[in-house]
Image (cartoon, rainbow, N blue to C red; front, side):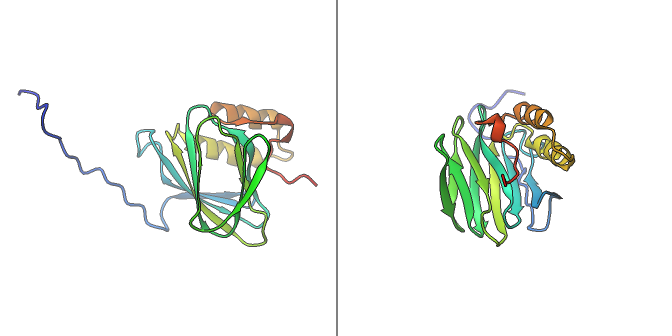
Length: 171
């Protein structure tokens, strides 16, 4: 059969994930739900719902070399930290934050209310492995900084300051 260079071959590959669907786990006051995974998107896109408990830290200042990260605030007031000068932005529902490659960023909930965000990685680079490893690493007490850094680096995350990289509040 002759190859057709002029017409698109349409496929029915849409994925619909309902609000209560997806793999969910909780650690250190943070709930993660995998919505669109690397497997579903052929490693092109990862979409995750994240709920931060009051005063929870999602991530300290870090950057990615090979992927972009986008945040959409669904509920609550998120503190997003950007740049090497630690500029803090307090943003509410409907806000979109785009952190392209090599852009330092971190996020946390500085309020006494829950914060709900959608987090997207493009490409996703098997990000689910990072979240599963993070769950294991942060379950260890005390947290092993070397194990944490190894996980971070494997999944294209690089702390700006390795002395202040663990997602715990300094007392």
